Image 1 (tube, rainbow, N blue to C red):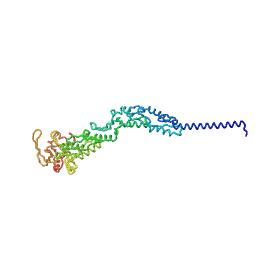
Image 2: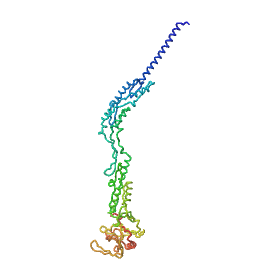
Image 3: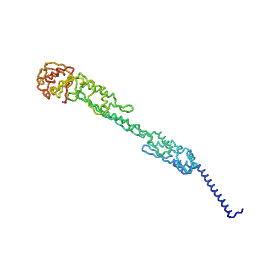
Amino acid sequence: MNYTNSERNNKKTSKGGVILIATVILGVILVGFIRQNYLKSHFARNTMIQGVDCSYFDIPKATEAIAEVLDNEKITLICGETTYEFQGKDFGLRMSDSKELEEILASQQGFESGQEYTIKTSLIVEDEKVEKCLSGIKELQKENMVKPQNAYIVQEDDGMLRIESEVMGNEVEFEEAVAMCKENLIFGETTIDFNLIANVPEVSSKDEKLNANVTAINHILDTVINLELTDGSIVILDKTIMKSWVCVDESGEYYVDGEKITAFVEELNERVKETGSTLMFTPSDHSPIALPVEDKRILSIDIEKETQQILGELEKSGTYTRMPNYEQEIDMAEFESYVEIDISRQKVWFYYKGECILDGVPCVTGNAGNHDTPPGVFYLKSKSRNAVLRGWNDNGTPYASPVKVWMPFNGGIGMHDASWKTEFGGEIYKTNGSHGCVNMRLEDAEKVYEYIDKTMPIIVYKSENG
């Protein structure tokens, strides 16, 4: 077959193109092969390790670059309110080996682009350098440390409790600080706050148990109990006494010693015995009053009952005014028959078996100021008719007063008729009273005489002061 020149030229061109394409393809393959081999030993682009751009670095170069950054790494230590600045080289911060870099490089095979990496296990520090840096921080020196102190309860001079606030302190165990610093550095931390490991108080001033204890005791100490005795004196039970009752146990908890309450009641009992017996009595048409009882009825306090009442009042808190709880107190409810004589109102009542047989009849008692009829609870000594009462007038002259009925109940003082008087009651006793006896109209005195016996109390009192 014969070819024309044109055909021959076309064939040459076609052959040359094939060769060129093959050459290009071969070149691409060769470049790819070379690149692939290169990336086996170099990090991909955009590879950041420990903040260092390691794109296309081999491991030795990356190690050198990272070491330089670690040396100049800014390390901040915080102690209390003070901040200290160091560099990585001050602690000997470096990579221990290239194992992690090799792992990062191996993980990039087949990838054109890398990412950001952090060294997690290969960083180390030098123990001696760490200790040297920390020993230069004054807050970590033992003599500069303030130990923490728990909030606690204190008792003031007046007995009341308050909470002394806690002391935060700045105490840090040096060995613990070293360990914390090393651990943070090898994990890539650049700011280390030693306040996080400072010893702190276990109990604060806001502690619920502490505040509840203070509130409970102060609630008790705020109580005031006025104990009225039969001699007119008042024993005041308040925090000036109760503060000595407050004790504290081994755990620091405050409490009121119950034995000291009982001891107080026992002391009160001894004082009460010196004042004589008492009678809480409700006069006719009048509010209750306290009356002394003749000496033979020695009074004592019911220790258990009084102690329990005090405990109840302390629990409620507040102010109380009352008589003590007497063990042998005379209860008028036990008596159906008794005579009642009110010096203030100058009247006599006689209750016989629950019935009022004399209802506030007038009388005249002892002359006020020099022959006052003593108040109290008495009993009939005897009774007789047609007696002559003898004695001495204030001017020294003798007197002899005949009476139809005579009922002595307190030495030479008794109830009797007084035929020489034309008026009874009112305020006669203030200027023209008796020598102490209770003068009555004959018909009234006769009625008392008829029914009274030695078992019936004779109650003499003043319903008003003065």
